[in-house]
Image (cartoon, rainbow, N blue to C red; front, side):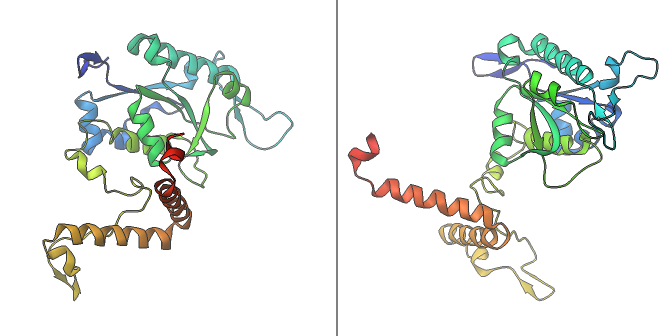
Length: 269
């Protein structure tokens, strides 16, 4: 268990991640490098793994079976998945206390899961930690998911051989938002999705490279003009590349403008 971190007048354990997997040796993997790895070493966050096979009862340590109703592949058994979740929850309760452990979500990686968003990553970073289950085969027996209040999560509309690499992506996205991980927290304010838009293009020296010039406004020193240019570019990139985000952005703006135009009495009701 990591050392307690000071948060105001109250001390609490570091943000805690527990990964349920058939391949615990894959971790921390990339999570042991750069800012995320340094944060792990400095105990800003804690990582544990739990092998599904630890709950197998036969000599072959089998954890799966054929799908009910027929079909290809294998399904992770409900008793195995539930036992692993129960152990992870017991770890959380021992480390975080019953009250904080109750706020730790149990998420299983699945192509049919709710897609991770930046807003969801911020919500997870604001909590005490997460339990991530890495599926393999044809998935997990639905009874374990229902019986343990598991929510399925996805990193995109693609199928992976297992949940381990998506789990690493989720942990990277969340841990970088924890206080003390990023050197300059202000850098998080302008990145993609933070304001519902994709990030504006970035430039650095030299001012001219292969005949391509850095936009003059970025060299002007006029911070108001630079901010306006960056905002306009963010809107342009979002409109071109992510029409879904652009529609949501426009809807929020219309709602905000409508609230501004509403009579004071109506807004207060």
